[in-house]
Length: 254
Ligand SMILES: [Fe+2]
Ligand SMILES: [Fe+2]
Image 1: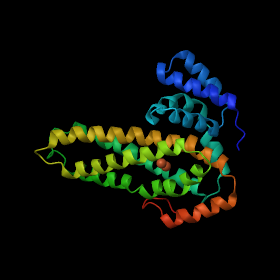
Image 2: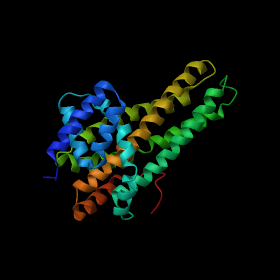
Image 3: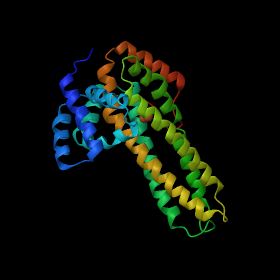
């Protein structure tokens, strides 16, 4: 269906297995760069999918991200050049920028919380944290547009590995985000020490994993989508379905 080189997929699959078993050695890294340098996102997706089908834990696939990132650095620029304003992927990419700003704020705010020695020292900080957590939770419609409009179109075309990973990450992040908000709101003088520790763990988890998630979508999943769904009429229709789901309170207008 796609112009996929079986041989390259096979090589890539072998390499990914090696990376996961032996970690990123210098040799493996050089091999990976050679193979990945000319690979198209669909081929990578298929190789990833094959590994999952062979029983690899989707979480282990994250290891290969580092190497892949090196060769993908201009992928987003190329992608954006193909998108007109209002294209559903364009909106998703713009929302990613907004989410990344929240993550930077979360990192800074957690840093302040970790400096506190008591709840009374700065109660306001916990209110700010809860508001920030709410903004991050409000990305829900963003994730829904991905899950209900974008992913099914890819899945219909047998690209199911990457979407499975993305859905799994959405679920894991959803529960951590809610927990962060609840923890910020329920902090008291009495439970301060525990709460502070929990906030640290949750904030770090969300910052790291949501950034990583966004990176994979911007650089792998969305370029895969543009390559796989080449019908402008289909994108129009997907845009309408996206409008029906709606946007986030902080999605920039236009
Ligand atoms: Fe996502
Ligand atoms: Fe996203």
